[in-house]
Length: 78
Image (tube, rainbow, N blue to C red; front, side, top):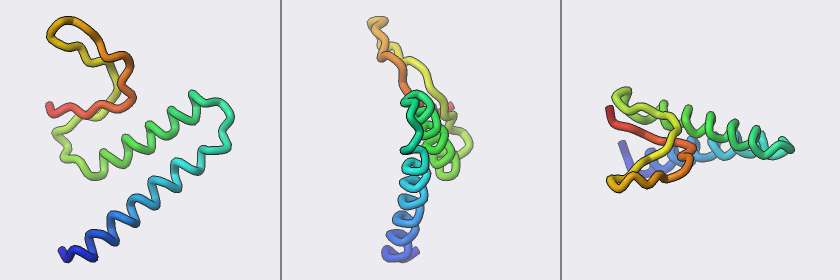
């Protein structure tokens, strides 16, 4: 694939994701807006990541037991 074709495809995908995000801009309730945008981002990732990767949300815990707080989108190789 040529560099210009790849750049064109990346611009197209980026514009689609941006349009999806902007479509929920009028939503007043911030939690609803954030949820919609997370769904769009997960769908985007699902299209381009190999199936072996799981996409979800959660909390990461380090080796000392401290947690990260909520992670909106987590990608796990598993």
